[in-house]
Length: 350
Ligand code: GTQ
Image 1: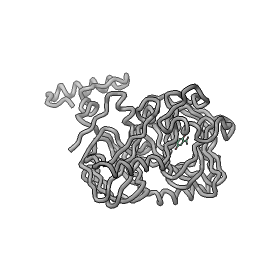
Image 2 (image 1 turned 180 degrees about the vertical axis):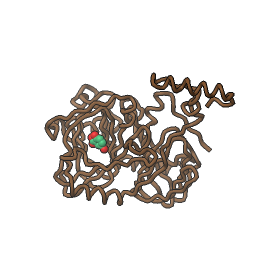
Image 3 (image 1 turned 60 degrees about the vertical axis):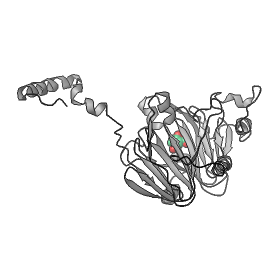
Image 4 (image 1 turned 90 degrees about the vertical axis):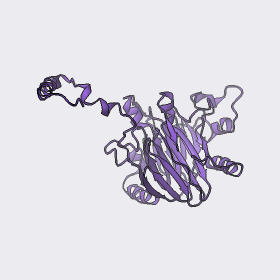
């Protein structure tokens, strides 16, 4: 805002603005401070959802619409500060998806990258380009962009997982493409979890193999709970927790050692009972799932109670301090992968 102008200059400026407006021209000096802010000013709010509560609504939706008719039967976790955007942050989306026994979510592909974090049920699958990942509780399963994917549940129990996608990021770039395969299920191309066997244990095929049909830059798409939990436990018994993070491990893409997807980074962390992290803030608004335990999250000045199954979001540049009431295990994902590529990522620690 240009302050301190004489009245007549202000009046003449206002007249100029009115004349320019129909030509889609506006004065920067009126809005510069709001455009180029001194620090992040997102309207994103800290927010929390209880899994059992969302599950109840999802099951009610399950009585009313099939996975097939819905294409994806998902309840969107929309940030209360971002109404109408379907975003949980300005760059990321979160939803809870339900597949009932016998159902199939038909095969499609899109420009958006997706991760699935399994919340309930055991043994349904996501197939990526015709390769099934058998999903167990708290597994992480990826759908790299433009890969055909369908989901199916051949078990006798409902299956629910958290979908994390970069929908708002792709919308920001106006780069969304999507298509349906036509058939509900992609033909099986290799046996279930073939690429996990080849790439999931710090190994890779010495020569070309069928698994190489995946994008070579992203060969692995299943990170089982049994493995990441084991690594966290070993870490927790071998060293002191990091004061700001606790015991924390990032999921990596074995092709380059970087984040799991071009736009999304994900990690898990463990806080020993009674441990409180020192306050830390970062530019990557982060979505968390409470996998085990209970505790508190202080986000900015507000305390939020955490119970098993809670999903909560910490906005960009708000301080986070976590306290573990019992041993606390969290999964988190954010757009840090994109921000680092763009040279935007920052963090600060107390
Ligand atoms: O499973 O492909 O929650 O395309 C939103 C969009 C899930 C999916 C979502 C999607 C999917």
